[in-house]
Image 1 (tube, rainbow, N blue to C red):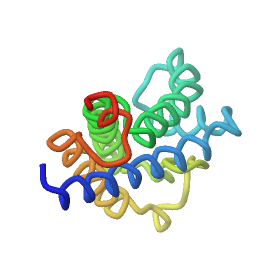
Image 2: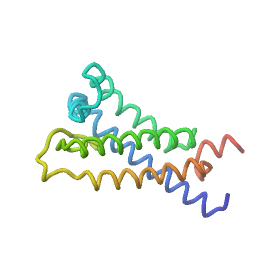
Image 3: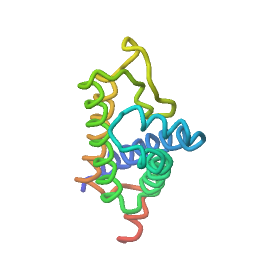
Image 4: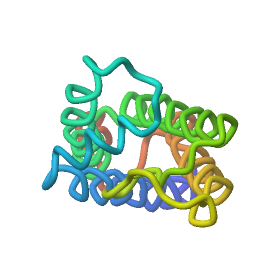
Length: 152
């Protein structure tokens, strides 16, 4: 890998770590709101809403930590990609079903007026994050990472 690609990879890894940390920290302080944000999608059965809503911030924070230190980068990036695809599909689902919600991606969430939805922007944003994850899946070796240190 070239020095430029490794440097780009480091920026991508840290950028994606910041995204996951921001999302996880925004949700972890209010687990009831996180569960409500999951509920309004009307995808999961009620029995799974709280476990998913309460657990999701911890998954996001774990991904943030792994990416920040660069440990298991390819695996963390692949899990990030899967989670982002779930988010994109979920947002597309509520949009297609005519449900008006705030995605709750960075805290909050819940029903909103139809004029306040931002589905297109949310999907594009998550597609951008998906591209970052894809870069790390393809180029997991980056500077300043535990993966690199362990491989040396």
